[in-house]
Length: 91
Image (cartoon, helix red, strand yellow):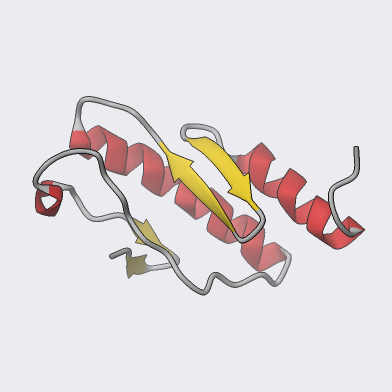
């Protein structure tokens, strides 16, 4: 089954193949990476690795990200270690 134009399909295929540690959900207007672990530091490390892979993939395709956000089901979100994407701390 083909998804969108060849360019969009290529981006989707590329991103889904570079994600190694997180789970991914793709929507019409965005993509979500998520991970379930008990250790927040480990979660941040694993997520940062996949965010680096997504960033490199996007740069190769000249794709930029316009908005990022972190959502957590844990209480005291302020205790989460920072996540990084393209050299920036995600909020």
